[in-house]
Amino acid sequence: MPNKPDISFTIQLCITNRPAGAHEAFAKVTWGSWDGVDSRARFDKVTVQVRAEKYDVSKASATGNLTARMNADDDGGWLGSAYSTLNSPGGWSADATVTYNVNDDGKGDMTWDVYGSPVIS
Image 1: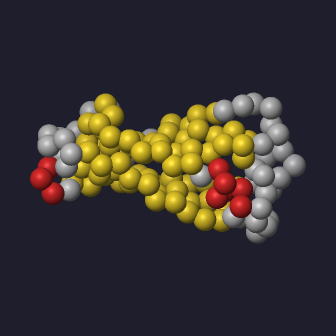
Image 2: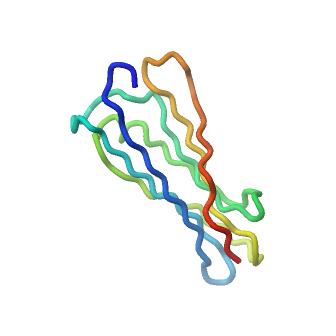
């Protein structure tokens, strides 16, 4: 990262069966900095969209804006979920997309498609 300490960023995805055939996708996001200093303007933008997908087609989604939290805290976490009431067995997975913009790097918004969770019924 330009003129700033690097930061680690991890996402874990999970899909689960809910009552009445519904499904819920979870994204657990954690981050940490090597310098241990809060309040660094590392990012102009960080959003995480988590999706409940059936055979790679989005059935529900939710987006969290983590920009302020990641700039204020040298380490932290966020848990987001997307809930689908579609009662249809088979082919369900959790997927996520991260959109980020590193402050002062001149590259603008970048996208990171996170590999999906294992598929469940």
